[in-house]
Amino acid sequence: MQTLIVTGGAGFIGSNFVRYMLNKYPDYRIVVLDALTYAGNLDNLADVWKNPNFSFFKGDINDAALVDNLAQNADAIVNFAAESHNDRAILNPQAAVQSNFNGVWTLLEAARKFKHERFHHISTDEVYGTTDGIFREGDPLEPNQPYSAAKAGGELMVRAYHQTFGLPTIVTRGSNTFGPYHYPEKIIPLFITNLIDDQPVPVYGDGMQVRDWMYVLDHCRGIDIALHHGTPGEVYNVGGDNDRPNMEIVTLLLKFLNKPESLIRHVKDRPGHDRRYSLDVSKMGGLGYRPEKERFEERLKETVDWYVANEAWWRKIKEKQAEYQAFMNQWYAERK
Image (cartoon, rainbow, N blue to C red):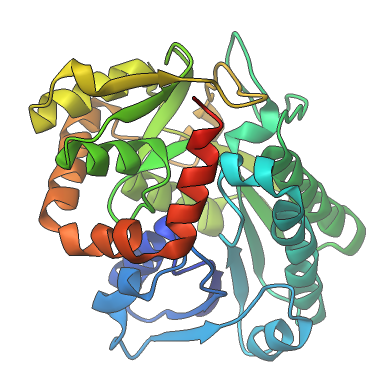
């Protein structure tokens, strides 16, 4: 594989992956396709823009003509493109279905038509639903919200294209990811930026929902390993092996920013909120993947420091993006 189309490459994980791949594989050509919806941000790619092996195209993954035009000169597609926020998918399920299911089909058709070496689909642990134990790749998919249901549907279409057409596919199911360039609607970047401004942080319910937390470079490394060494047709859990309740994350953020607990606001929980995710990453371990879970607090502190040092990046979103403000006002008004 020499030329990769990275869809959603101007988003959080996608932009970090683009940077990672250009640094690790200087002979690879990375073609980013991104619709630049609310979370797509060209500022995320500013440091790679002049790299001769990088190119960018603005467009929707549902645009079959555009996708075909790019795919005919590529060897693989790595699909990050998604409506990725549970809360937004509750307000607008159609957008999640259009991107997370229909768009996946358009990309699969292009990969099949041009006989790509790999189609790598980035999925989520949320397709499993909730558990008291630990998720393994063969467990049933029991998504509980429109976002995760649409992601599960996209996964099943990927499976069908492997089984029916022999397309060499890979699916990775990632756990909760944090790090630089994370759009400030998710818990960690939202809370960091609120706390910097001494604003309250809205904790759903009792805040004891458990997530497996993974630093974004661990996620990028896991995708890289599965892309190059995974068995076609297989699904791999990529996680941090680092289960922690949300309240523990909040407590650490308060500590790192030296802020009082009085800024915590417990709000009405969102509908269908899964109580616990936990991933078995031993299958990825067989490919050589090892998350740096012992560095979790160090990486979280580095993330806090990044937002402190890059205030202009997130203030442009929180203070000047009307779409961001409209969503936050609507969503959290209903959580009171």
